[in-house]
Length: 442
Image (cartoon, rainbow, N blue to C red; front, top):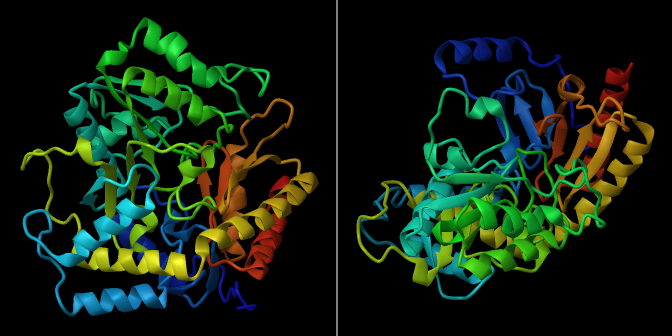
């Protein structure tokens, strides 16, 4: 649609403000970042309650890889809702759950013999991964990365390390977690430079942590995102995860791959970890799996299974409507070649972002894979001072012009349209981003 964005009244308009006031009065404080009040959506176009047409480059926080209300997914949800919506797949049986588990086992990397635990959210998939790792190894320690985001439930929160506000007033969380620096080449925690650093960020796991104060025979698993999401869309170098994997194998430590944000084609591969040529022992999925219907999956090597009833379960995991939406989503990704499209459109988008970087001193870094892209804003390219306030103003200016964006890290802006995005929509978003950056720079 060439007429999108179409701003009839500067958002938030009067109807939006009324709903926002009611929400703030009755709904618990969460993470609201933009005053968008949606009424309907299709593809990448959101209509708000004041009739504005907005271009969505947030994808519902990387949920809508197939776009808003894809007709195949909508029809699957409608059909299943009219037949059977819930039958507790943890306690009883139905084909949709078994079929989805089979399909996920077949398309995830690693040995073909896998099992799947279904939940409702990314955090729940991580909680399941924690329990699977501890149960199968009978080890109680875990390792995660600084900058990681794995969720906000107590177990997942113990692994999360991206913002102080996520941890404040919740101490203590799960014990036995050690955090180590992630491979952030733009802001190396060791003040080294790649590749002359000899990949110390990966080698220090064995040479420092596991050799001095983290007994390796007590560590069940290391949790990592292929590309750190909330932490800033940080992409580690190509040798990072293979080096980490070699250390883990040396001590029998499991690798848990958090694909909640990076999975299902977002990075230009079906799974983000494929960029590093390795496979995990446990893989967690959520967000885009149901194209907007809450569902998650924890996929793991068959021999890691609990093997006894009652060690872990839930009520709504593997919900029928969620399974129907997920199977339809996988069909759409395959038939419309959206993973390949993510790689192609991502390359175009990144090139255009790098051109924008040449024009705007505020842009310190452009990074990402496929359509999992981000820019980091800095006040000075030499000192790399975080431009957090400027970042927030750029997002606000873009919204006023009809573009929905989200932040990431301390001063990043993530650019994550649905995988159905067109070059025309990318060009439109870039024009708005260009204007917004210029306005803030003045």
